Amino acid sequence: MIKAIIDNLKGLYSLLVGLSITGRFFVSPQKTTHYPRQVDDPECLKSYRGPLELVPADDTGQSKCISCQMCVRACPGHCLTVTKGDKGKAPKVYLYDFTLCCLCAACVESCPTGAIRFSHKVYLVAPSREALHLDLLADLLARAPNPPQPKAEAEAEGEGNQVLAAPVTGEAPA
Ligand code: SF4
Ligand code: SF4
Image 1 (tube, rainbow, N blue to C red):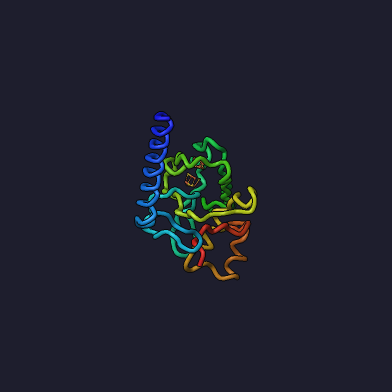
Image 2 (tube, protein in one colour):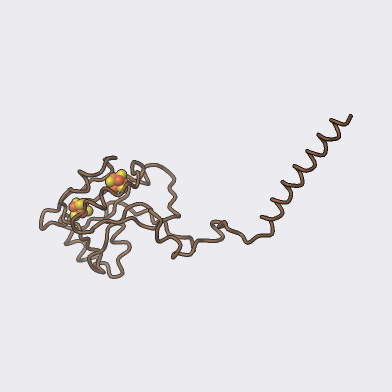
C-alpha cells in the first residue's frame, strides 16, 4: 500500500516536472521559423552553405572561371563538369550535381580565381534528383543585373556562357 502511494507520488512529481518544462517553452519567445509563412533574415544565412554558385565577374553574367579544371580534379564526389569554350578561357558548360555534393569546399579552396562559392539558398527544393543537376552558367545569367540582349546571346551561342537549363533558384517565396 505504502509502496503504491510512493509510486503515485513519484509519477505525479514527474508529470509536474514535464508540464513545467512544457509551460516554460510555451510562453517563451518563438525560436523556430514557420516556413513558408515566415522566412529567415538573410543576415542570419550568411554562414549557411547552400549549393555552389559562380561568382560574377561583372554585371552581365560573365564568370571568373578560366576552365582550368582544378575544381573538377579536387572534387571527391565527381559533382562538377566544366568544358572550355571554343574561344578564350571562359567555360561553355559548367554543370554541378548537387545530389552528390557533400559541401566539403575542396572545389572552392582549389579555385585559383575565386570563381565559385557557396550560395545561401536555404529554401532550395526540387521535385526530382534530376532537378538538382544544376547549370551554374544559367544560374549566373539569371542572377545578372544586366544580362546580354537576345542578339548578343545568339552571337555568343557556342562560345560563351550557354543556357542549358532553367536554374533552381532556392530563393525565399514572395
Ligand atoms: S563542395 Fe566538395 S563535393 Fe561539393 S562540388 Fe565542391 S569539392 Fe565536390
Ligand atoms: S571554377 Fe575555378 S577551379 Fe573550377 S575550372 Fe573554373 S577557374 Fe578552374
